[in-house]
Image (cartoon, rainbow, N blue to C red; front, side, top):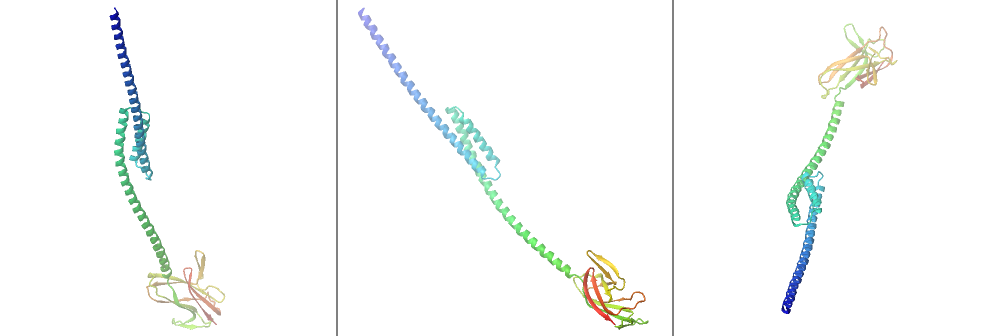
Length: 296
């Protein structure tokens, strides 16, 4: 009986020892497992932070590339927006190996895409810079050409005005004097007012190669000592000037000197008055030449 009790006590001690050993082993394993899990979680958190930082750096590079362009590259904008969406998704994701690896793979793919897009963007920037240089050069050339054309136009306009001013007929040798007209048609100059039958006005049209050939005219005005206009005494108006003329002297100009004489009769049966007579020749409203003579 006593031996049986001793045996039973020993068995209980052995079982108790085994239980204690198992408990200690389980506690140690659980503690180690907890530490490993905590360490793994910390590693996952750190790796997640690194991936987030890499994605943020990538987005910043896109922002810089987009900011360098006056016209944003649509491919760069789209890629940047996808990265920002991935960052937002990663920030709220679970910290586990599977999830983190999936985001890591996406990051690596985006890295390759970014390298390609940035190289393409640099090429476009270089082409745009070349184009801008060409456009600036073309603009300068156009401005220089415009200045040259404006200067040429001004010179041509000035030259045209000079030619227009020079392309007019002038007269030389204007003379007026009284004449006695014989029945035979012979004309005898006279300075006696009571003997003069007509007043003769003669002048020479000077040759001017700038004037086109054809029919031309001058207005001849003869004023007596009382300032009366002899002859037709007709009136013609040119914008702001009115001229009373004695006769219209018409002729055919052929690019050579041309001698012309015209005659003016007294009004009715009256004789010419004694005194100073003035002869004016007008080309439209412009006075070409003037002369004077006396009848005694």
